[in-house]
Amino acid sequence: MELSQEQVRHIAKLARLGLSDDEVKKFSTQLTNILQYVEILSEVDTSSVEATNQVTGLKNVMREDAVNGDWTTRDELLGCSELPVERDQIRVKPAIE
Amino acid sequence: MDLLSLSILELHDGFMKKKFTSQEVTRAYLQQIVEKNTVLNAYVLTTQDSALEQAAESDRRYTEGKPLSVLDGIPCGLKDIFNTKGVRTTCCSKMLERFVPPYDATSVTKLREAGVVFLGKTNMDEFACGGSSEHSCYGPSMNPVDPSRVAGGSSGGSAAAVGGGLAAFAMGTDTGGSIRLPAAFCGCVGLKPTYGRISRSGVTAMASSLDTIGHFTKTVGDSAAILQVLAGHDPRDATTPDVPVPDYLKDLEKGVKGMTFGLPKEYFAEGVDPEIKESVLAAAKIYEQLGAKVIEVSLPATKYAVAMYYIVMPAELSANLARFDGIRFGSRPKQEGESMVDYFFNARAEGFGAEIKRRIMIGTYVLSAGYYDAFYNKALKVRTLIKQDFDRVFGEVDALIAPTVPLTAFKPGEKMEDPVAMYLADALTIPANAAGIPAISIPCGKTASGLPVGLQIFVPQFQEAKLFQVARAYEDALKI
Image (cartoon, rainbow over all chains, first blue to last red):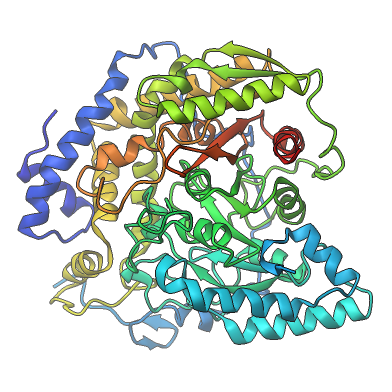
């Protein structure tokens, strides 16, 4: 399994991750090495094995659908943003032309 | 009296008997930080003023005869991934270099309510990704035993703080070994509890199905005392099962007579430093002398653990770190670009370091169309096999004994350009995260060159009381 520089650029695009040309080159080699290493899993027969998504046996943990105001306030959470806040909203760049 | 050498339980006893005060102990630790932090780089932020205020309040409680817990007045370091209200929490990433959380993590709240004194925030690999703390945007933490070597990671600052006498205890997180590995490197006790035993709420998520909260201490008894305060169900973390919290100190000194321990042969395979094997086998001999039976067992899926982990973990990480886009959370980039999409690319390019980028890339790749089954689903099935191995052997043995890490503390730069070599350092710690079982690393002698070796003990889920009992028996045997 080899990850070409073109594929690296494609994955970076999916992840919304800006990469320099040097990073693309380096990651192409390093990610190829990692993917070659994990190929060891193909030698394991898992045809009759279920996937493990959780380990402690919990199922459908529910809670009341209620606002819990004792934790943080709206203003405190908006204050985590470094962008300007107007009328309880974060002002961002245009998403559509 | 050397205040810095005392365990939590000894400090509490001293406070009760008015031998010394929390302010004296806190000042001694703060002084030690001033003297040693330049070399060790254990702390990335110290909160001296509030620490002294907290200590003064604690002293008043002891004067009134009403301490809040055995942890009252005890100075602690917090890995910089625990949200602390009003105190900068960076995950040692440029992405969060100015982030001040509006609330405390549940574990921090519990420590606060127990009267703990917070000395500051400790260094770590960026977003807890790494085995050496070299991926911190503040540079690596160095090893208190040999400062030319790394403290390990990702919770390297917390390990260096406890090992170097810069905190009475310190909090960390362990997703694939990030508490046990640096504990082994720095010669302290590191606990990774059962998955979900301590709430993860308010601790920045790395890989949610594997992340656990734990701590570094000087002794096994201290580790038990802290878990007593932190364990339990939390409505804010839906993955904390409502399993009763037993008294962790009750059976601590009951010994191991009549118990059976397993030595998993895969943990002594090629690639494990012979001196480390020797130390751990010597520990097994001590357990036999203490009346335990030691047998060889096999966990055949162990050899696939690292490969499984480097699929499942990045997959979960890439999803968790998607929230860091410079809008609600994360640094606003210097170059913003013209559009929203440009802004995302730039914020994440500027904010994340190389290892985070690598892991986001792997995670995105293995979850992408056409590869999900071949990689991610396959890895989840292999995870089942790893868990089944443990389930099976725990039918025969009370606990498993193994090395914590296949190697001792290395020098900075040795593995930075070879990610796979760095990942293999986690080979013996990952399986416990995969199975959700508790594990502890305790000091187990030193190599000829003077570097600490870690002895790792595993027990079934939610049997931490037995884990402490087994670990304590060895600790006591070394004292005699």
